[in-house]
Length: 70
Ligand SMILES: [Zn+2]
Image 1: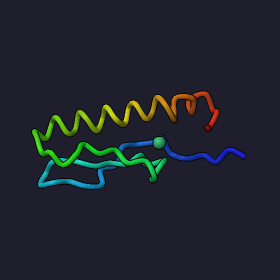
Image 2: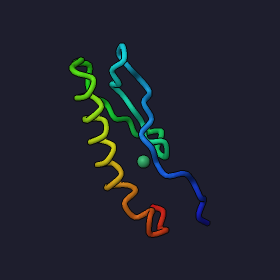
Image 3: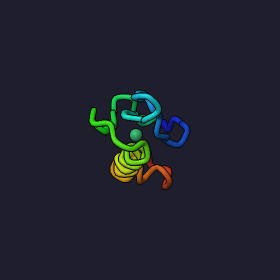
């Protein structure tokens, strides 16, 4: 049985001020992306979260477009 679900998205779960420091994959709530507690520029954290998320997408969700859920 294939359960249809939305395309995985990066969901920000924690911010320091307006800087996103932690996020999850909407399809894998147990996966946490963390930029660490070192607060830098907001853009750097956003880029790092996006990098971690795209890496996760490639590793875990790359085949979903083929209709083959892992
Ligand atoms: Zn995921």
